[in-house]
Every structure is written in structure tokens, then in C-alpha cells.
Length: 348
Image (cartoon, rainbow, N blue to C red; front, side):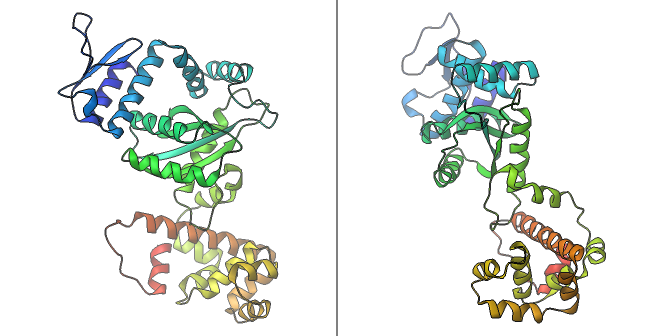
């Protein structure tokens, strides 16, 4: 962003008029927020009156202004990281080379790890405030790169504690008045000249994570390829019935036990012990349930291609189900529908 855009977004975020102190204006130690190239003034507000959330946004604005002016050595380092997501591929390559040469990132042979966090709402200044705060809270486990296509981008340490990251992401997003809709990690190859592909995969996977069922715990782009494929399929009831009648039978059942059983069995690649552990049932119970499945389901499980189609379709239903759940207004408690109606709503 250019300085005028930064000032406009800061004024909007604070709900007050923000200006750059003119050269002919006297300094005001109580009101001025100095940076390398000048000072900010917030209308009718002293520095001491700013809340922690307001300070975070001001800090983000100062960071962007200093990077725009190159006014400090710290701004130089931040600029190199920000260049990883520049539109110019030669700038991206030069930035990655410099980061590796200066040992500002992990130079091991297994490449670089990128973290993308998709936020809502996503003004650039808010994303920058969130990103800088998260990097501070996680004590060097992530390095903020910048805002890119509505997401906060970080270089992540491979020793990053995932539980600590999850808690910090949610807490810092809430502190900035935003919601973390999804986040994902993508690994760049050590042979890559820049990280553009890894950044794109991380952002796509973060958007995908926002729609996945809670049972899916991985946040690595490399583990979400199957879900990405499922997401591209059209939401068509007639296509589903034609492609996999067995899935429609399971989705229409009033009791979800059969659907859950078949899905767990397929997730376990037919390994009874793994499926039983997930379902918390005895092996005999699993076999009994499978024998009692509707004929269409038994036939699908007995055929290789039909079994794969059934597995894929059940995952597609999970994805649609989760998308519908997330679309429900938070303040409204939906009235439960009979299972048959729920399936029709999903497949319409």
C-alpha cells in the first residue's frame, strides 16, 4: 500500500482522523507517533488514550510506512521478507536468495515452510496488525511476511508447536476483531527459485480448511489433496444418485450409525482393527453391522470401483454438510429436520 492508503485504512480502523504531521508543525510529545520518515497524529487522541487493539493497528501502519520509506535497518529485513510475495518473480527470487544467504530463514535442505491464515474481515492493515502480533506472541516460531490475497502469510519454523499456534491464531484474530476462517501449511522445495507456488497452495488449503469437517485435523496442504479434489465436484443430487446410489441410501437413513460405520471402515482401508478403534466397537460388532447394511451398500463394498466411489461420495457429503452448517447464522438455532429431509437439502 502507498502512504495515503495506509493513512486512510488507519483512520477507518480507529474511527478518527489520522494525518501525517507537516514539516512546519511543532512536535507534540503527547500526541505524535513518530516513525523513521515523520510522525502520525490521531485527531483528538493522546498516545496514552490508545487501547491495546488500537496500538496494534497503529503499529501495523507505522510498519508499512517505514517499509515504504526504508527508514530503518529493521524495515530492510521486513522488506526482504515482504518481497517473497511480490508480483515480480525476479524480486521474489532475489528475496529468497538473500534470506537464505543471510541465514534469516532455516537453510536446511528440506525447504521452506509457509503458513497462510485466512481472516474475516480482511482489510490489509488489520491483517498486518494480526500478523505482527502473532509473530510476537509465538516468539520467533513464525516470521510475518505480509498480507496477500486476503490472507496473512508467514514463514514458519518446523518446530512450531501446533497447539500453541492454534490458540494464538484464534486469540490474536479475536483481539483484532476478526475471525480466523482457516489456516494451512505448505512446504516449498529446496530447489524452488521462489515460494510463489507454496504460498498459493497454503492459501488455497486455508480456504479449503474453512469448509472441512472437524474430523479433519491436518493443516498441511500435502495432506488435503483428496479434499481439494472433492471440492471441485458439482453439487448435484441427480449426479450423486446416478454415481452412487449406496451413498444416497446411507445419507437418507434416519440413524447415522450405518453411514458412520461404512465411512470409518473405508477410511481404515478395510482394516477392521483400525475401524473398530475409531468407532469404539468390537470386531464382531463391526462385521455384524456390515452384514446388515442395505443391499446397495453391500454391493458397493464388494466392488473395487463402487467402493472407491462410495468413499469419495461420503466425503463429498461431509463437505457439503459442513458448508451448510457454517452458513447457518450463529445466533439462530436451526430446527432439526428428519434425516431424509436433511439429505434432500444437501443433495439439492
